[in-house]
Amino acid sequence: MIAVLGLVVGVVVGLLVRPEVPAVVEPYLPIAVVAALDAVFGGLRAMLDGIFVDKVFVVSFLSNVVVAALIVFLGDKLGVGAQLSTGVVVVFGIRIFSNAAAIRRHVFRA
Amino acid sequence: MSTEDNPTPRPDRDEEEAQVPAQEWVAQRPATGRQRLRAGLWPPRVTRAQLIVALLLFVLGLGLAIQVRSNSDDSALRGARQEDLVRILDELDDRTQRLEDEKQELDDQKTELENSSDQAEEARKQTLEKERQLGVLAGTVAAQGPGITLTITDPHSTVEADMLLDAIQELRAAGAEAIQINDVRVVADTYFLDSGGGVQVDGKKVTAPYRFEVIGKPQDLEPALNIPGGVVQTLEEERAVVTVTRSQKIVVDALRPAKQPDYAQSSPR
Image (tube, rainbow over all chains, first blue to last red; front, side, top):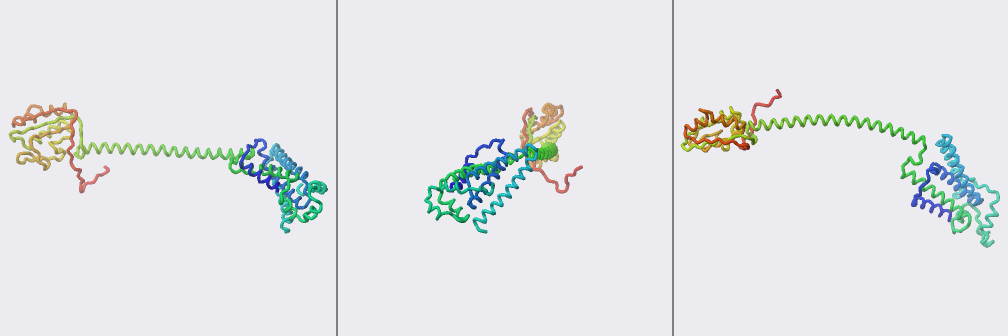
């Protein structure tokens, strides 16, 4: 419950405060958000499976974000940033879908 | 990562929930995913796991909101990559070029139209000027300018139509441009008729004193009247009293209605 509240508060604060994002971080923010979403879906699925561990969640969340940003950064340096971002988004999209399917099976039993 | 494949979750969990009495915990222990979800959502429990997850989700929500915000209402260029920006710049340059060309074309057109409308305006002005000049001649508009006033008083009723006509002819020959006698405008087809005690000018009765308002060059008009054997002398022989005064401002404001010809139409050549 508190976790859901955290998400809601985060969205509200982001919309209200409108912080300036440093230009260096800006290109990586969308990818980082997608990576974090993947971690969150993974965590939700683990919770439903009964194997949720907060430490693992934290590590997976942070490493997802960092690795995703790193890939994009590397892609930008190599001149294939756009393609690599697309690749990262596709991979995370597939994972989010499979996690969502597992969650769906738990919640709706279908 | 997604499946949280942690092989030993149990010890942590048990430590966390240690405050809950053992038998109650067993009774509440959720068996299915749905029950676990419900148990996690309600009642809210302040545990380390919940707090950490809340913190991370807060960060996620923040990033999500910022990204959505900067994508939606800021310029779409903020997050764009270098090659995209270069492409957009190229497109904008092309567009600017096209618009510049179009502007040039329209400017040319505007200049052309202005010139032609200037010409039309000039032609209109000239036509107006001509109309005014012709109006002065035809007596349809009032006129003013330097000229003379010729007054003929006729104490013995000796002045006749032909004398007035002579005066008019003399004035015309001397370059009179607009003439009126009392309140009748004298034009090309003006005629004079004797009628008892006066003269009819264009069918209008005019009586002495006859007052001629003449616009023209005063230095030409006055001598023309005063030459020996001229108009003034002839009239004085008839015992009329004639005075001629020069003036820098003569107003000829008697008008004649413009007559539309019934048959003749203007022809371009």
